[in-house]
Length: 198
Image (cartoon, rainbow, N blue to C red):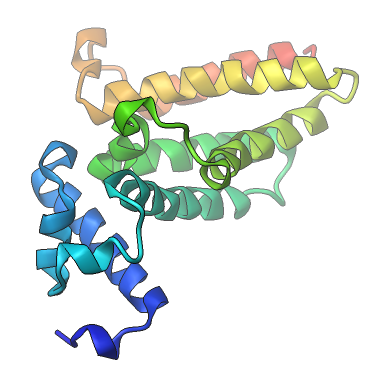
């Protein structure tokens, strides 16, 4: 491992974010600490505090990497018809929950210490997800006003998230032998048909 004088601030930040992601996959969020991240990349914890304000800041940056991956997957569907794009976006969300469960859960499980406010840059990152859903829903039914679109996007995505949570935790066995992708398609088909007035 190269020593501190061989890494720029940006490189050190990238190493630490990758280490967080690896450690959470291996051991879970509850066992994460700045010291463990520092040990993983061969630096002192004190050095990381020159790059990140605290553990919350480090986790938020790691979560931002997960959100960037998800937003990229959602953007790849943007050229489809609105309904098709929403189906693909929801499938990407479910796939992330299933295939990278620990990282996906970290986005939703992490709580700021001492009820500290979530920084604006991170709120903008999470708002970008809903912005993409809203744009597609607006294209699907152009007669709805912004407040209706805002509410509908969050209502629909709450249903998508619920299915993803149950799938990620293997809790769908209580529903019998129903496939989570089939559930997702059913939710989207019925909600979007109603939304579009069909």
